[in-house]
Length: 113
Length: 113
Image (cartoon, rainbow over all chains, first blue to last red; front, side, top):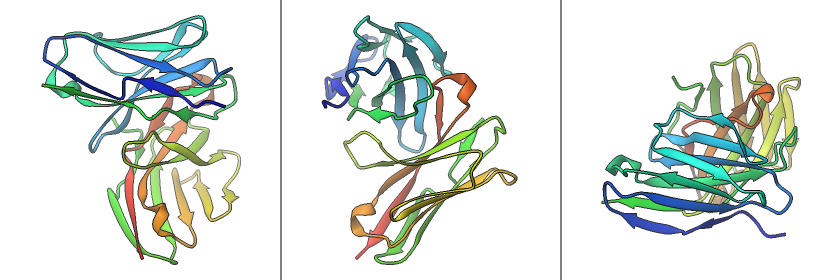
């Protein structure tokens, strides 16, 4: 079965711009989580969606937002980009419920200049 | 406040020897733990997990040990192989918090041929 697909793979934006990242989960998976990875910080949890509802949110400013569509695809938006937002953004999907079989996509490498 | 800690940023091991990666956590509510492995430019891949009701789980060359009283877990890889060279993330979940997975900062393992 197809894995988790994240688009685009690479992105370069300038400060102040906004960006939208996309994640298509494994077919049948209803939970999608987003993480930010920066050197030395590991994976920082951004938010998690299940059946179009945000169930959990990490400690990120309101510039970071997301949504999930009825087909479980998810988008993450970052507004008013800052240099510090440069990172690898990873999406993970799971069936949800008590199944913790998380599968990660390859990520979107965002560079803010 | 880092709830999941991996105090060794890097580790080097000779091929064929044992690799031991350590992880400490502070939140006693965590009741499920996972290890992920990540190669550069790829998303993390699931390795092995353990429930808090167990103290050991084994899968081939990988064994995870959990010491709840010490809030400590470790991943043992025996024997280590050059293909094991990657960044290893320890992660923890509070099952009642749905799919909010807290990751540690990672340990970079180098297996020297």
